[in-house]
Image (cartoon, rainbow, N blue to C red; front, side, top):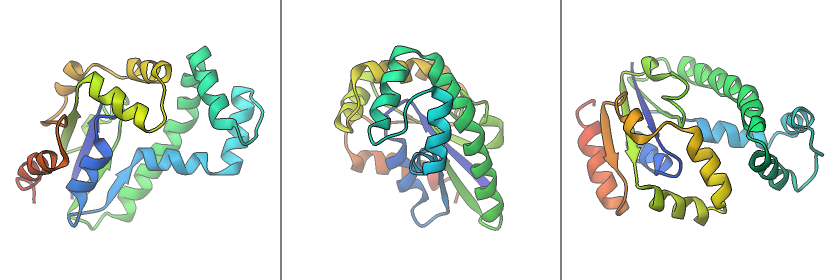
Length: 188
């Protein structure tokens, strides 16, 4: 079984790239999707609310963002809760799909979490900060949160050193797809 990790900086296009790469080739694990499911789980949200000391209600997402912006220590607290749960789901995914010849893993903090040794191939999706911020903002994000999350990640220059391939995602989906297919064809 070949494990392919897809990573990149915040709003670089990892999800789009992951879907292109995995389509018809193998199962895809998405760390972001696991986190999204956690935030939809009422028991998890209640637990997190207690840990961060905020009231559990419908405006929880806004409250969490404000708490993160005001004090970045809260981001570390949240990561200490979420990251082990994501890793547990990643192991479950790997075991469940052990008979697949190729597995894809979309993990934003793959390098920062020191997971790079767990993959046969790592593909880095790269885009300029200005483009990434536009994408982040288009999905409802704000500048302060973007800066906090962006600073949490290693620089592109450092991350690239741990990756086998770098794909620039600054123009259109057609070009991204061509570049990704050129890479994946080497491993099929």
